[in-house]
Length: 182
Image (cartoon, rainbow, N blue to C red; front, side, top):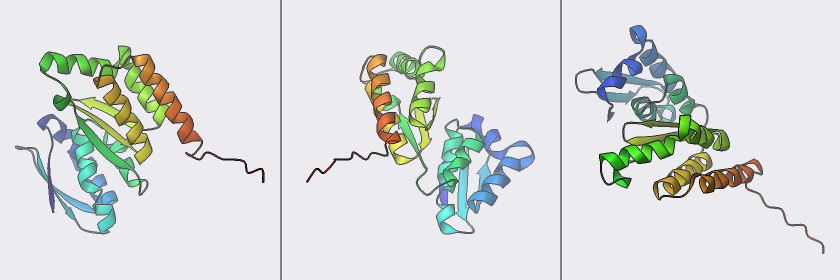
């Protein structure tokens, strides 16, 4: 059994209207959720396929970090789907710096976050003091690298160029062919 704590304001999203979301997670991930509404603590117990059950805690964490339940459940769509959360507090000096960096990550009218999603295929949510990603490993890595570039002060244009380059590499499947003339 694993325990995950999520923010108080995300418990209602995890449970869903009349418990529908909770039941969907339990059915699809083959786990049982015991949610303490007072503390935000969620106990996750595997009750079926242990491999599917391993995704249960990440689904709960993803919902806790701002993802919609349907998006969090995409973690079950393939063996390689993963969830990662980047702690922005660790990369900032104070509250004002956190607010500024979140603004840079989101971009004007949400454009930077949208481009991260469009150019990588990953889903990106900025909630509280975290940037969270759901995607395949190379998609998650591309978003993580782009976020680190922004946090390190890189101009947005350089980050967009990096993301476009990574998209081309991912579209090619990461394979570079060499013609053998011999």
